[in-house]
Figure 1 (cartoon, rainbow, N blue to C red):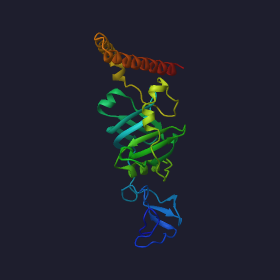
Figure 2: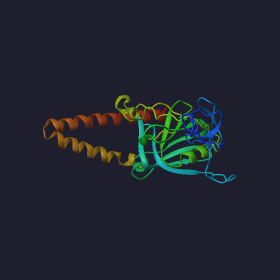
Figure 3: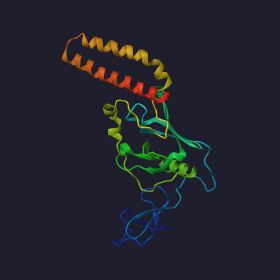
Figure 4: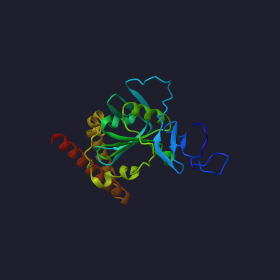
Length: 253
């Protein structure tokens, strides 16, 4: 098992394909992955937790990173590192916005039994992290450059299925722009989707009044740019009003 092998399956120092066997996992999901002589398989040894054998995780594990998740306001909510705390409890996974983001938006929370697979993300530096596939088909992403193996190890300890094949973060950009087309319509989810936080809801009337004052000020200039700002602001207000109405209607059903 200690024999070295490249990701391409060619033994180090030779031009011959590696024979079937256990080799170091090129994606580092687990210590070793089974090579069938032609390609990597999904068979892996248990992920390394970085802890001594027999040492268990606490009842709750927390990691710092970013997130890209479905939003109750429509589209997807994105927060970069280190604006999110990922907490894995005994029965739930929660992503909590921190600092200013936490003052504006509520948490993403999903029961662990509703996560059908957790997996590493492959692609660019900007999409480094982990993905979670939910039982309703929706995807949530946790951005991080560190502790990916430990997060997967905690989830596996909680009986969450780990997909050893890395995937791309699909639909991240289009999801962020989804509010432009769906007018606040969010897809029903097995997760608790983030929306405006309680402090944000309290301060919303003041922001609305201030926004209207700014629009009136630009309109009074009579310039094309001033009317452009008014048009953009009007669309934004319409989207916000429809989003709030949809959320209120959904809660009262």
